[in-house]
Image (cartoon, rainbow, N blue to C red):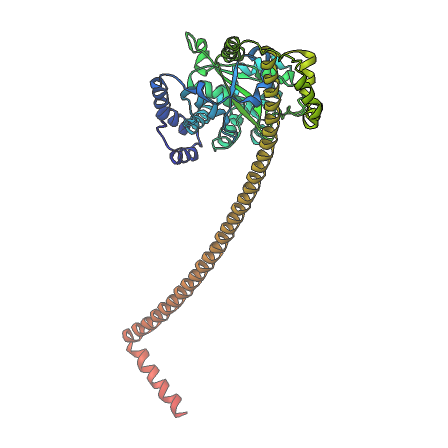
Length: 448
């Protein structure tokens, strides 16, 4: 369904160096995306598998909602938005490209975003502190340095860094993504002990940029709900005011999308109705009648195997004391057993996901370190080669200049000698007496 492939997106990401380039990307591809979304009748995200691991993190007001998982590979914000918009993750690449282009092209607006002040007031943080927390990028935070005049350049730095795939997103990306899809985004923050201030700031609706213009109806549209969480479903570390890593990429957070399906309670009622009707048709389980047949009694006495089996069976005495098990009790026991089994599976899945995420992160970190070392080596070699070439070229130039200078001096001397000879010949030819005197003098000298 995507109208541009990953290779073309990668080439466009390299051109994201100026505001003009970012504006050109928005002008060329944003209308295509909106036309595509207008042609999609509805999203089939409701048919996706429920993420049970995240259900325990849902805030109280979203207790009846169903969380749906997205791939935790750094593109999870755009995976979630793509799933909610068209039912799959095919738009993730173009959504990232347009989001970072939106940040770059309108860095002045996002550097002084109206909602940042609301985030600061809700959390109790200062304006500079909440801005750095929302950036969630070390390089962009260094550019910002707590100075509001540097905010637009910090947004541009964030856009350049996050233009590449597999880079985690921040709250500024949520704000820009709302502008790209022209719909509000409800940033759902989970109930985590000790992170009340961060939740007060990030648990809110993020509105599109055009929604702040006069006579705009975008803020009244139905919001898309996307939830913050982490791959290993563990609480965020240290959310004190002097720390900034609730949104830091080192926390390995990812986004989970939430789709407003049928409440969980109603679904459970629907699934239990057929069981009750079936049990009503069958009727309650009647207890077996005890017989007083002397032959059977004698047989029980003479059969040691059956007697031993009755003693070792713990369920039969319990049934005789409690009476027959009713259908409702059987259903509750089955539910309890299923619940225990699901909890064990959930714990195992959580453990497996944690291990897999750790291995993936280690491999990515090692690969990045290796790539950086190779790139640095290549850069150093190129610089060294360039310096060597410059030295050789300078030596050749000096040699040529010296040779040219020597040649010119020799030519000049030759010209001077020729001029003197020519002048002497001219003088002698014009005055014959001097020539005669020289001849006589030469003869006298010879005779002496």
